[in-house]
Image (cartoon, rainbow, N blue to C red):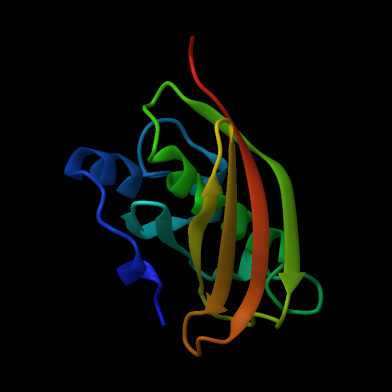
Length: 149
């Protein structure tokens, strides 16, 4: 079940900016993984990691690093949508709990803000298997924000 309805819409220009995250401009890590924003709202984002065979590890399941990258990336629009394009922010802490293996399926993650501080944003994220809704992993993340003077 999606958490999106718990979060108000963004202003249209901000929603447009973050809906295109990883799709335009310079090539980013999210582009390399094929991550796609599906919905972005105030303090919330849903993002998809499309399955490709090269994401498998030796045992045939999707590599945990790809899933962790999805969990970290889904909160980028969540954090960034509250600031202008000049803001810089980065992960300073991330804890991931892997709950289930993902085999030959897309992963869909939701990320949301738990609390915003002056220069620190606390977030959570959860990834599920797209076809079954089985929880794959959960994460707690802390981001640091730097604003121009």
